[in-house]
Image (cartoon, rainbow, N blue to C red; front, side, top):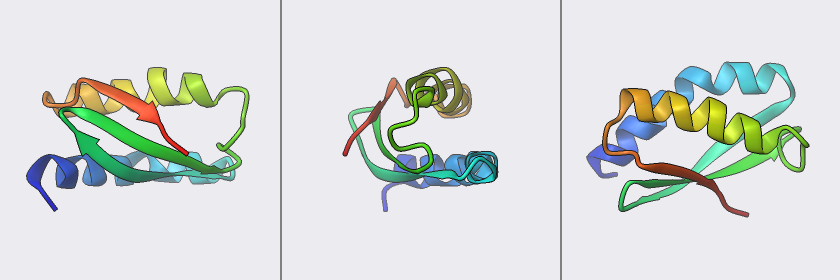
Length: 76
């Protein structure tokens, strides 16, 4: 696993308990040119608030901690 992907996985593990508390979770699919590709699962998949969680929550959290991250996007 390359260094940025490892950093992203470690950061996601910090926020994972909050997602799991609401019945959801997130899986790291890949990191390509600074774009983090995530799969929302469980209650997060299809949730009306998923886009807000993804961009205002997860993306903000990752970009604060990992300068190489430029964007977060959901993939199926």
